[in-house]
Image 1 (cartoon, rainbow, N blue to C red):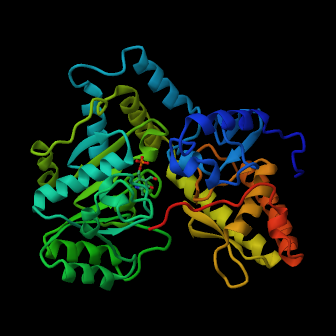
Image 2 (cartoon, rainbow, N blue to C red; image 1 turned 45 degrees about the vertical axis):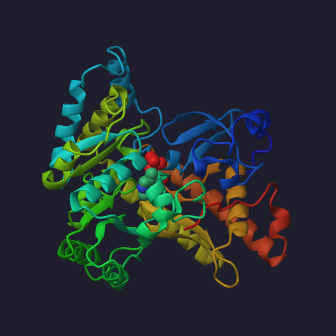
Image 3 (cartoon, helix red, strand yellow; image 1 turned 120 degrees about the vertical axis):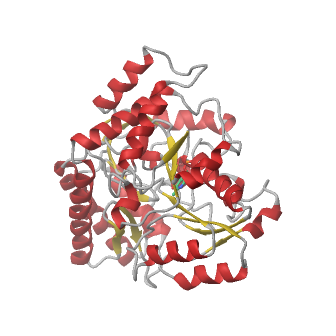
Length: 432
Ligand SMILES: Cc1ncc(COP(=O)(O)O)c(C=O)c1O
Protein backbone atom coordinates (compact mmCIF):
# COMPACT_ATOMS: atom_id res chain seq x y z
CA UNK A 1 0.00 0.00 0.00
CA UNK A 2 1.77 3.11 -1.24
CA UNK A 3 1.86 6.54 0.32
CA UNK A 4 -0.71 8.64 -1.51
CA UNK A 5 1.72 11.15 -3.02
CA UNK A 6 -1.04 13.11 -4.69
CA UNK A 7 -2.67 13.62 -1.29
CA UNK A 8 -2.96 17.35 -0.78
CA UNK A 9 -4.30 19.19 2.24
CA UNK A 10 -4.69 22.55 0.50
CA UNK A 11 -8.32 23.18 1.46
CA UNK A 12 -7.78 21.91 5.00
CA UNK A 13 -4.92 24.34 5.46
CA UNK A 14 -6.89 27.27 4.01
CA UNK A 15 -9.81 26.61 6.35
CA UNK A 16 -7.52 26.24 9.33
CA UNK A 17 -6.03 29.65 8.62
CA UNK A 18 -9.51 31.20 8.76
CA UNK A 19 -10.43 29.19 11.86
CA UNK A 20 -7.29 30.43 13.61
CA UNK A 21 -8.83 33.90 13.56
CA UNK A 22 -12.41 32.91 14.32
CA UNK A 23 -12.56 29.79 16.46
CA UNK A 24 -10.74 29.73 19.80
CA UNK A 25 -9.27 26.26 20.44
CA UNK A 26 -10.07 25.52 16.77
CA UNK A 27 -12.77 22.92 17.32
CA UNK A 28 -16.13 22.44 18.99
CA UNK A 29 -14.86 19.16 20.43
CA UNK A 30 -11.64 19.07 22.41
CA UNK A 31 -10.38 15.75 21.04
CA UNK A 32 -10.99 16.72 17.43
CA UNK A 33 -8.72 19.79 17.45
CA UNK A 34 -5.61 19.61 15.20
CA UNK A 35 -3.20 19.19 18.14
CA UNK A 36 -4.95 15.94 19.14
CA UNK A 37 -3.81 14.37 15.88
CA UNK A 38 -0.55 15.05 14.01
CA UNK A 39 -0.85 18.70 12.94
CA UNK A 40 0.01 19.35 9.27
CA UNK A 41 -0.19 15.67 8.40
CA UNK A 42 -3.80 14.91 9.27
CA UNK A 43 -6.57 16.73 7.46
CA UNK A 44 -8.08 19.44 9.67
CA UNK A 45 -11.54 19.19 8.11
CA UNK A 46 -13.70 16.38 6.79
CA UNK A 47 -16.58 16.86 4.41
CA UNK A 48 -18.52 13.60 4.32
CA UNK A 49 -18.67 9.96 5.31
CA UNK A 50 -20.10 6.77 3.93
CA UNK A 51 -20.15 3.47 5.81
CA UNK A 52 -16.73 3.11 7.43
CA UNK A 53 -15.05 5.65 5.13
CA UNK A 54 -14.69 9.42 5.44
CA UNK A 55 -13.54 12.06 2.96
CA UNK A 56 -11.64 15.25 3.76
CA UNK A 57 -12.23 18.68 2.21
CA UNK A 58 -9.52 17.94 -0.38
CA UNK A 59 -11.28 14.76 -1.50
CA UNK A 60 -8.89 12.29 0.21
CA UNK A 61 -10.53 9.09 1.44
CA UNK A 62 -9.80 7.30 4.73
CA UNK A 63 -10.98 4.20 6.55
CA UNK A 64 -12.09 5.63 9.87
CA UNK A 65 -11.45 4.04 13.28
CA UNK A 66 -12.44 7.07 15.35
CA UNK A 67 -16.08 7.04 14.29
CA UNK A 68 -16.71 10.61 15.45
CA UNK A 69 -15.28 9.64 18.89
CA UNK A 70 -17.81 6.85 19.30
CA UNK A 71 -21.28 7.80 18.11
CA UNK A 72 -21.19 6.22 14.67
CA UNK A 73 -21.91 2.62 15.59
CA UNK A 74 -23.85 1.68 12.45
CA UNK A 75 -21.81 3.65 9.94
CA UNK A 76 -21.86 7.06 8.27
CA UNK A 77 -24.77 7.96 6.02
CA UNK A 78 -26.55 4.82 7.27
CA UNK A 79 -29.73 4.32 5.20
CA UNK A 80 -32.18 3.27 7.95
CA UNK A 81 -31.17 6.16 10.20
CA UNK A 82 -31.24 8.65 7.32
CA UNK A 83 -34.69 7.48 6.38
CA UNK A 84 -36.01 7.86 9.93
CA UNK A 85 -34.58 11.38 10.20
CA UNK A 86 -35.96 12.43 6.80
CA UNK A 87 -39.39 11.05 7.62
CA UNK A 88 -39.52 13.02 10.87
CA UNK A 89 -38.08 16.13 9.19
CA UNK A 90 -41.16 16.27 6.99
CA UNK A 91 -43.27 16.52 10.16
CA UNK A 92 -41.26 19.14 12.07
CA UNK A 93 -38.31 19.18 14.46
CA UNK A 94 -39.21 20.78 17.81
CA UNK A 95 -42.68 21.35 19.25
CA UNK A 96 -44.65 23.32 21.85
CA UNK A 97 -45.92 20.27 23.75
CA UNK A 98 -43.99 16.97 24.07
CA UNK A 99 -43.90 14.85 20.94
CA UNK A 100 -45.09 11.24 21.01
CA UNK A 101 -41.61 9.98 20.00
CA UNK A 102 -40.44 10.76 23.58
CA UNK A 103 -42.74 8.01 24.80
CA UNK A 104 -41.95 5.65 21.92
CA UNK A 105 -38.18 5.82 22.50
CA UNK A 106 -38.65 5.55 26.30
CA UNK A 107 -40.60 2.32 25.81
CA UNK A 108 -37.83 0.91 23.62
CA UNK A 109 -35.09 1.82 26.10
CA UNK A 110 -37.17 0.43 28.95
CA UNK A 111 -37.19 -2.95 27.19
CA UNK A 112 -33.54 -2.83 26.10
CA UNK A 113 -31.63 -1.56 29.12
CA UNK A 114 -31.59 -3.55 32.37
CA UNK A 115 -32.27 -0.80 34.92
CA UNK A 116 -34.34 1.49 32.72
CA UNK A 117 -37.57 1.64 34.68
CA UNK A 118 -37.76 5.35 33.91
CA UNK A 119 -35.95 7.51 31.35
CA UNK A 120 -35.07 11.14 30.67
CA UNK A 121 -33.36 12.36 27.52
CA UNK A 122 -30.44 14.70 26.97
CA UNK A 123 -28.55 16.20 24.04
CA UNK A 124 -25.08 15.17 25.22
CA UNK A 125 -23.33 12.66 27.44
CA UNK A 126 -22.24 15.53 29.71
CA UNK A 127 -25.85 16.66 30.21
CA UNK A 128 -26.85 13.12 31.05
CA UNK A 129 -23.98 12.71 33.53
CA UNK A 130 -24.73 16.01 35.23
CA UNK A 131 -28.44 15.21 35.41
CA UNK A 132 -27.61 11.92 37.13
CA UNK A 133 -25.25 13.64 39.59
CA UNK A 134 -27.89 16.23 40.45
CA UNK A 135 -30.47 13.49 40.98
CA UNK A 136 -28.07 11.57 43.24
CA UNK A 137 -27.28 14.67 45.29
CA UNK A 138 -30.97 15.49 45.60
CA UNK A 139 -31.85 11.92 46.56
CA UNK A 140 -29.17 11.59 49.23
CA UNK A 141 -28.94 15.22 50.40
CA UNK A 142 -25.15 14.83 50.12
CA UNK A 143 -22.46 16.43 47.91
CA UNK A 144 -19.46 14.15 47.41
CA UNK A 145 -18.68 12.02 44.38
CA UNK A 146 -16.38 9.02 44.06
CA UNK A 147 -15.25 8.89 40.43
CA UNK A 148 -13.66 6.25 38.21
CA UNK A 149 -13.49 6.81 34.47
CA UNK A 150 -11.74 8.18 31.42
CA UNK A 151 -13.25 11.67 31.57
CA UNK A 152 -15.14 13.53 28.85
CA UNK A 153 -17.77 15.42 30.90
CA UNK A 154 -17.18 19.16 30.49
CA UNK A 155 -19.39 20.37 33.38
CA UNK A 156 -18.03 21.88 36.61
CA UNK A 157 -18.51 18.94 38.98
CA UNK A 158 -16.10 16.81 36.93
CA UNK A 159 -13.78 19.29 35.15
CA UNK A 160 -12.66 20.81 38.47
CA UNK A 161 -10.59 17.62 38.86
CA UNK A 162 -8.67 18.14 35.61
CA UNK A 163 -5.75 20.27 34.50
CA UNK A 164 -8.25 22.50 32.65
CA UNK A 165 -10.17 23.74 35.67
CA UNK A 166 -9.89 27.49 35.17
CA UNK A 167 -13.22 29.26 35.53
CA UNK A 168 -14.63 26.74 37.98
CA UNK A 169 -15.18 27.58 41.67
CA UNK A 170 -12.32 25.92 43.61
CA UNK A 171 -14.71 24.88 46.34
CA UNK A 172 -16.00 22.08 44.10
CA UNK A 173 -12.58 20.39 44.17
CA UNK A 174 -13.14 18.86 47.57
CA UNK A 175 -16.36 17.23 46.40
CA UNK A 176 -14.90 14.76 43.89
CA UNK A 177 -12.13 12.21 44.26
CA UNK A 178 -10.90 9.37 42.08
CA UNK A 179 -10.80 5.70 42.92
CA UNK A 180 -9.02 3.04 40.87
CA UNK A 181 -10.66 0.43 38.70
CA UNK A 182 -10.29 -3.12 40.08
CA UNK A 183 -9.11 -1.71 43.42
CA UNK A 184 -12.00 -1.90 45.85
CA UNK A 185 -9.78 -0.68 48.68
CA UNK A 186 -9.37 2.68 46.91
CA UNK A 187 -13.15 3.11 46.99
CA UNK A 188 -13.38 1.98 50.60
CA UNK A 189 -10.90 4.71 51.52
CA UNK A 190 -13.17 7.36 50.00
CA UNK A 191 -16.17 6.07 51.94
CA UNK A 192 -14.00 6.21 55.09
CA UNK A 193 -12.73 9.74 54.37
CA UNK A 194 -16.21 11.05 53.61
CA UNK A 195 -18.00 9.10 56.32
CA UNK A 196 -21.75 9.20 55.60
CA UNK A 197 -21.36 11.92 52.99
CA UNK A 198 -20.99 10.26 49.59
CA UNK A 199 -23.82 11.14 47.21
CA UNK A 200 -22.71 9.04 44.24
CA UNK A 201 -20.24 6.53 42.94
CA UNK A 202 -19.91 7.60 39.30
CA UNK A 203 -18.01 5.18 37.09
CA UNK A 204 -17.64 3.61 33.68
CA UNK A 205 -18.40 -0.12 33.98
CA UNK A 206 -15.09 -0.87 32.27
CA UNK A 207 -11.98 1.12 31.41
CA UNK A 208 -9.19 -0.91 29.81
CA UNK A 209 -9.21 -4.23 31.62
CA UNK A 210 -11.99 -6.62 32.50
CA UNK A 211 -13.31 -6.43 36.07
CA UNK A 212 -11.54 -8.81 38.45
CA UNK A 213 -12.75 -10.49 41.64
CA UNK A 214 -16.36 -9.41 41.10
CA UNK A 215 -15.25 -5.78 41.19
CA UNK A 216 -18.53 -4.31 39.92
CA UNK A 217 -20.61 -6.36 42.33
CA UNK A 218 -18.36 -5.29 45.16
CA UNK A 219 -18.73 -1.64 44.14
CA UNK A 220 -22.49 -2.05 44.04
CA UNK A 221 -22.62 -3.64 47.50
CA UNK A 222 -20.41 -1.10 49.19
CA UNK A 223 -22.27 1.81 47.53
CA UNK A 224 -25.58 0.45 48.75
CA UNK A 225 -24.23 -0.18 52.24
CA UNK A 226 -23.26 3.49 52.52
CA UNK A 227 -26.55 4.78 51.15
CA UNK A 228 -24.99 6.33 48.03
CA UNK A 229 -26.25 6.11 44.44
CA UNK A 230 -24.37 3.99 41.90
CA UNK A 231 -24.20 5.70 38.50
CA UNK A 232 -22.77 3.89 35.47
CA UNK A 233 -21.45 6.19 32.77
CA UNK A 234 -22.33 4.17 29.68
CA UNK A 235 -21.64 6.98 27.24
CA UNK A 236 -19.01 4.83 25.53
CA UNK A 237 -19.95 1.33 26.69
CA UNK A 238 -23.67 1.68 25.96
CA UNK A 239 -24.65 0.39 22.53
CA UNK A 240 -21.11 -1.01 22.15
CA UNK A 241 -20.45 -3.75 24.77
CA UNK A 242 -23.92 -5.27 24.42
CA UNK A 243 -27.37 -4.10 23.30
CA UNK A 244 -28.13 -3.26 26.94
CA UNK A 245 -24.61 -1.86 27.59
CA UNK A 246 -22.24 -2.73 30.43
CA UNK A 247 -25.07 -3.62 32.79
CA UNK A 248 -26.19 -6.43 30.49
CA UNK A 249 -22.64 -7.45 29.57
CA UNK A 250 -21.42 -7.76 33.18
CA UNK A 251 -24.76 -8.73 34.73
CA UNK A 252 -24.58 -5.91 37.28
CA UNK A 253 -27.22 -3.19 37.44
CA UNK A 254 -26.50 0.34 38.59
CA UNK A 255 -29.08 2.62 40.20
CA UNK A 256 -28.80 5.11 37.36
CA UNK A 257 -27.04 4.76 33.99
CA UNK A 258 -26.25 7.50 31.51
CA UNK A 259 -25.97 7.12 27.75
CA UNK A 260 -24.85 9.27 24.80
CA UNK A 261 -22.72 8.78 21.69
CA UNK A 262 -23.87 5.60 19.87
CA UNK A 263 -27.48 5.83 21.03
CA UNK A 264 -28.20 8.20 18.10
CA UNK A 265 -25.56 7.05 15.56
CA UNK A 266 -24.24 10.62 15.51
CA UNK A 267 -27.40 12.61 16.26
CA UNK A 268 -27.25 14.66 19.50
CA UNK A 269 -29.00 12.32 21.88
CA UNK A 270 -28.32 11.00 25.36
CA UNK A 271 -30.37 9.35 28.07
CA UNK A 272 -30.54 8.97 31.83
CA UNK A 273 -32.08 5.67 32.81
CA UNK A 274 -32.66 4.16 36.22
CA UNK A 275 -34.82 2.65 38.89
CA UNK A 276 -38.02 4.60 39.57
CA UNK A 277 -36.92 5.17 43.17
CA UNK A 278 -34.08 7.40 41.94
CA UNK A 279 -35.60 8.66 38.70
CA UNK A 280 -38.66 10.06 40.49
CA UNK A 281 -36.30 12.73 41.86
CA UNK A 282 -36.51 14.36 38.43
CA UNK A 283 -40.02 15.45 39.48
CA UNK A 284 -38.40 17.74 42.07
CA UNK A 285 -35.14 18.95 40.54
CA UNK A 286 -34.64 21.28 37.57
CA UNK A 287 -33.46 19.23 34.63
CA UNK A 288 -34.76 20.89 31.50
CA UNK A 289 -33.67 22.17 28.10
CA UNK A 290 -35.64 23.53 25.16
CA UNK A 291 -34.19 20.87 22.86
CA UNK A 292 -34.57 17.92 25.22
CA UNK A 293 -37.33 16.40 23.11
CA UNK A 294 -36.01 17.37 19.67
CA UNK A 295 -37.53 14.82 17.37
CA UNK A 296 -34.91 14.14 14.66
CA UNK A 297 -32.62 12.68 17.31
CA UNK A 298 -35.43 10.72 18.92
CA UNK A 299 -36.32 9.28 15.51
CA UNK A 300 -32.64 8.39 14.97
CA UNK A 301 -32.51 6.71 18.40
CA UNK A 302 -35.55 4.59 17.59
CA UNK A 303 -34.06 3.54 14.26
CA UNK A 304 -30.76 2.59 15.96
CA UNK A 305 -32.60 0.28 18.37
CA UNK A 306 -34.63 -1.20 15.51
CA UNK A 307 -31.41 -1.96 13.62
CA UNK A 308 -29.84 -3.50 16.75
CA UNK A 309 -32.86 -5.79 17.00
CA UNK A 310 -32.78 -6.83 13.35
CA UNK A 311 -29.03 -7.16 12.84
CA UNK A 312 -26.07 -8.54 14.82
CA UNK A 313 -24.49 -5.10 15.22
CA UNK A 314 -22.65 -5.70 18.49
CA UNK A 315 -21.66 -9.26 17.58
CA UNK A 316 -20.04 -8.01 14.38
CA UNK A 317 -18.17 -5.19 16.15
CA UNK A 318 -16.83 -7.69 18.70
CA UNK A 319 -15.68 -10.13 16.05
CA UNK A 320 -14.03 -7.38 13.96
CA UNK A 321 -12.37 -6.08 17.12
CA UNK A 322 -11.11 -9.50 18.19
CA UNK A 323 -9.70 -10.27 14.75
CA UNK A 324 -8.07 -6.85 14.41
CA UNK A 325 -6.55 -6.84 17.89
CA UNK A 326 -5.07 -10.32 17.45
CA UNK A 327 -3.64 -9.64 13.99
CA UNK A 328 -2.31 -6.17 14.91
CA UNK A 329 -0.51 -7.49 17.98
CA UNK A 330 0.83 -10.47 15.98
CA UNK A 331 2.31 -8.06 13.44
CA UNK A 332 4.11 -5.97 16.03
CA UNK A 333 5.34 -9.07 17.91
CA UNK A 334 6.71 -10.52 14.70
CA UNK A 335 8.49 -7.24 13.90
CA UNK A 336 9.67 -6.86 17.49
CA UNK A 337 8.35 -3.32 17.80
CA UNK A 338 6.49 -2.11 20.88
CA UNK A 339 3.29 -0.96 19.22
CA UNK A 340 0.25 -2.67 20.61
CA UNK A 341 -3.50 -2.54 20.77
CA UNK A 342 -4.38 -2.50 24.44
CA UNK A 343 -7.79 -2.72 26.08
CA UNK A 344 -10.76 -4.79 25.01
CA UNK A 345 -11.62 -5.55 21.37
CA UNK A 346 -14.53 -3.08 21.17
CA UNK A 347 -12.65 -0.34 22.98
CA UNK A 348 -8.90 -0.58 22.47
CA UNK A 349 -6.13 1.99 22.09
CA UNK A 350 -2.89 2.03 20.10
CA UNK A 351 0.01 2.30 22.53
CA UNK A 352 3.55 2.88 21.28
CA UNK A 353 6.14 2.30 24.00
CA UNK A 354 9.71 3.60 24.21
CA UNK A 355 12.81 1.75 25.41
CA UNK A 356 11.66 2.25 29.02
CA UNK A 357 8.29 0.76 28.19
CA UNK A 358 6.59 4.13 28.68
CA UNK A 359 3.87 5.22 26.25
CA UNK A 360 5.39 7.66 23.75
CA UNK A 361 3.34 10.22 21.84
CA UNK A 362 6.32 10.85 19.58
CA UNK A 363 6.38 7.22 18.43
CA UNK A 364 2.60 7.20 18.15
CA UNK A 365 2.72 10.37 16.05
CA UNK A 366 5.07 8.71 13.58
CA UNK A 367 2.98 5.55 13.44
CA UNK A 368 -0.29 7.46 12.95
CA UNK A 369 1.34 9.75 10.38
CA UNK A 370 2.35 6.80 8.22
CA UNK A 371 -1.16 5.35 8.53
CA UNK A 372 -3.00 8.55 7.62
CA UNK A 373 -0.73 9.10 4.61
CA UNK A 374 -1.89 5.71 3.37
CA UNK A 375 -5.57 6.29 4.05
CA UNK A 376 -6.14 5.03 7.61
CA UNK A 377 -7.59 7.39 10.20
CA UNK A 378 -6.57 6.45 13.74
CA UNK A 379 -7.04 8.93 16.55
CA UNK A 380 -5.43 9.70 19.88
CA UNK A 381 -8.07 7.72 21.78
CA UNK A 382 -10.01 4.54 21.20
CA UNK A 383 -9.92 2.37 18.07
CA UNK A 384 -13.60 1.82 17.31
CA UNK A 385 -15.50 -0.25 14.79
CA UNK A 386 -18.93 0.12 13.26
CA UNK A 387 -21.38 -2.30 11.70
CA UNK A 388 -20.25 -0.92 8.31
CA UNK A 389 -16.59 -1.91 8.64
CA UNK A 390 -15.73 -4.87 6.40
CA UNK A 391 -13.13 -7.64 6.53
CA UNK A 392 -11.64 -5.97 3.49
CA UNK A 393 -11.25 -2.68 5.39
CA UNK A 394 -9.46 -4.53 8.16
CA UNK A 395 -7.16 -6.48 5.82
CA UNK A 396 -6.13 -3.28 4.06
CA UNK A 397 -5.64 -1.53 7.39
CA UNK A 398 -3.45 -4.35 8.74
CA UNK A 399 -1.21 -4.19 5.66
CA UNK A 400 -0.77 -0.47 6.22
CA UNK A 401 -0.16 -0.97 9.94
CA UNK A 402 2.56 -3.46 9.07
CA UNK A 403 4.30 -0.95 6.79
CA UNK A 404 3.93 1.84 9.35
CA UNK A 405 5.32 -0.35 12.13
CA UNK A 406 8.36 -1.11 9.96
CA UNK A 407 8.94 2.61 9.42
CA UNK A 408 8.76 3.24 13.19
CA UNK A 409 11.13 0.34 13.83
CA UNK A 410 13.68 1.70 11.34
CA UNK A 411 13.33 5.22 12.75
CA UNK A 412 14.03 3.93 16.25
CA UNK A 413 17.06 2.01 14.97
CA UNK A 414 18.38 5.07 13.14
CA UNK A 415 17.56 7.38 15.99
CA UNK A 416 15.52 9.72 13.81
CA UNK A 417 11.92 9.34 14.97
CA UNK A 418 11.43 13.05 15.55
CA UNK A 419 12.92 14.01 12.20
CA UNK A 420 10.55 11.54 10.54
CA UNK A 421 7.47 13.43 11.72
CA UNK A 422 6.42 15.90 9.02
CA UNK A 423 4.21 17.91 11.33
CA UNK A 424 4.10 18.34 15.08
CA UNK A 425 3.83 15.65 17.71
CA UNK A 426 0.32 14.86 19.01
CA UNK A 427 -0.39 16.57 22.32
CA UNK A 428 -2.29 15.50 25.39
CA UNK A 429 -3.64 18.81 26.56
CA UNK A 430 -5.77 17.68 29.47
CA UNK A 431 -4.94 15.38 32.35
CA UNK A 432 -6.61 14.38 35.58
C1 LIG B 1 -17.16 8.26 29.26
C2 LIG B 1 -17.71 9.57 28.80
N1 LIG B 1 -18.69 10.15 29.51
C3 LIG B 1 -19.22 11.32 29.15
C4 LIG B 1 -18.77 11.99 28.03
C5 LIG B 1 -19.37 13.30 27.64
O1 LIG B 1 -20.16 13.16 26.49
P1 LIG B 1 -20.42 14.42 25.54
O2 LIG B 1 -19.14 14.74 24.86
O3 LIG B 1 -21.49 13.96 24.60
O4 LIG B 1 -20.88 15.54 26.42
C6 LIG B 1 -17.73 11.43 27.26
C7 LIG B 1 -17.21 12.13 26.07
O5 LIG B 1 -16.26 11.79 25.46
C8 LIG B 1 -17.19 10.19 27.66
O6 LIG B 1 -16.21 9.61 26.97
